[in-house]
Amino acid sequence: MPSLARARPNVSELITTLRVNFVAALMVWWVATGHWLDPSGHAPSTAARMPMRVPEVWGIVHRGLPVAVILALLLAGAFAPTRRG
Image: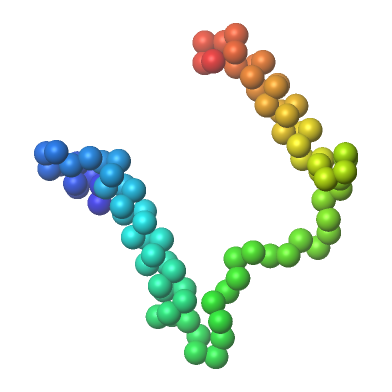
């Protein structure tokens, strides 16, 4: 759809894409909660409960934060001195 609008002059492809994404999200919501909904049931939940807790390191910080910081530093070091960086 945005590429068809791009063929016409003075139509921003960015704005068209943003509008189409918004309309598509509303259509998915409408189908999931209205038209295709089982009359005897409810809309399916997208959030599943985790069967366990994530281990904590320093009080409220779990192990994912140090892993993310180390990974970010490694990637920054790997891409900084190269042509890609």
